Length: 324
Ligand SMILES: Nc1ncnc2c1ncn2[C@@H]1O[C@H](COP(=O)(O)OP(=O)(O)OP(=O)(O)O)[C@@H](O)[C@H]1O
Image 1 (tube, rainbow, N blue to C red):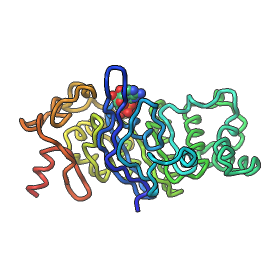
Image 2 (tube, rainbow, N blue to C red; image 1 turned 90 degrees about the horizontal axis):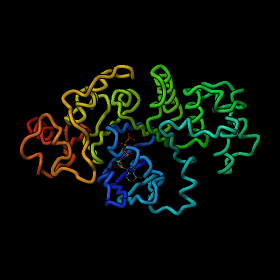
Image 3 (tube, rainbow, N blue to C red; image 1 turned 180 degrees about the horizontal axis):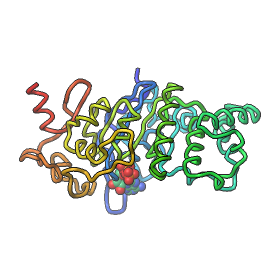
């Protein structure tokens, strides 16, 4: 059985001027020990989806569908159980999260906190575990006595990763974990995440707009556009030979795997993502699509098979698949 299964998940924010459909009918699954990358431009719904997984969305958000973690639906879980799931079974590392560390508390106390809060360790054991966790993320044990301002941005992000690992979760959700860091430090933190996931058999969902980073770290890639999944499949294949024109443009924007410094303008992709409150008819990507045909503005696009273990929501991908 999959560790995580998303079945037709939708998230709508209710705001004064109407409803914002941020995530629309996403279905995905993640096996234990596997790593899934979720890519897409700003506003495509990646963070909303990540927050929905642990019910961390603000109250104006309405979530539909099913999110099964080990067979248990997160969306209908009692709050007590939900609190235990957070940290202990699944934890999240946010974008720029290192800025969220408490400036007046020592690093070690902050790493120990989830262990103590969830009664997973006595104070002595928690101290030992902090030392172990600091070592795992490449920081010396004495750093437990430091305050956040004494660490660099990359070191603080390592602390956040140690916190996420503290309760030995089975799933880590990393939302743009390296965005706020400079290029060299990004590469170090990414290889740390890769190593930890492989060593401890933890499942990973990593979110980024950079397809090359995701292709390097993850086995599977899911590409989102305007709240929908538009392509899904083995990451290297999606990166090297995307079947959806939007994924192709994203891959062209970040052409080199493992080199977050190599950034180019998206090829053949002008304009901006649509306003979610005024989505175009048919395929939401058609106004920007370099290969759109007449039917794209009216057709009900779905994720169609696009090669072994692959799906893409594009008429061209479907046509190619039918020919082959
Ligand atoms: N609290 C909120 N109220 C209303 N709309 C929201 C709220 N949070 C997010 N949105 C909208 O939902 C859509 C998806 O946003 P989300 O932050 O999930 O995208 P994203 O792909 O993670 O973007 P980024 O990479 O910039 O974080 C956007 O149109 C955004 O404006």
